[in-house]
Image (cartoon, rainbow, N blue to C red; front, side):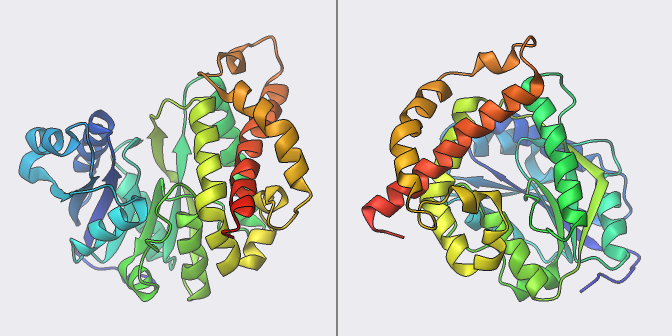
Length: 314
């Protein structure tokens, strides 16, 4: 499934966006500055934004990019699929709207990995700041690298990934049933590798994650993943799911955790409110703050699975 070395390859960068006008414009502009001799199309897919994103992108970038405007919010899986369908590119690069590529060689780094025989190239997410979430992301990068080397190739996300068109089309792209936060990327990666696609980790293909993360936003997303997405992934990929830390926090697999949910989740929800400024307290060891943050948003995931179990919709 590797892309053969050609003089002028068609490459599309697909950027889904929902209410992120400022960052998606920066991401698209950085892509337009990439140093490459290949044919590159930047496709911004506005997923039914309500902040005027589509109008802002069109006013700022005009014909420099291809804008796909969805009338209603349909989720990142559908948005990415629509972006892929809008072009005939041989190589698809997906980034999030709050991820801005570092330097002008971003596309070239992904392309080099593909031309060495990979069908999937996972890039690196950079957080150069000194805050808690920046440090935690850097720690996660190291952990994911080690996990990938040990054979856990599903640990990355579609914040920064390149996939050959041939491989993407073979598995019919993202599954639109994953229309809320969580697992849509890992579902795609599992299906790609099971279909024969070879993955590669390309740490030199870097983006800076510009989103302002808060404990409440992470907890909310984890709760959504536990409620809306976990059961789909668990049913389709039980062996892979069993190797993930998520499986240890799934009430459908461990019903006794419902007691933990009823006991601790209300406390975790209270601690998750606000911006979690206490995570920036330097007098607390980073390891302790990381443990507490993970415990809180892990309980949010647990609560999502417990809700689904109680409702009998697993």
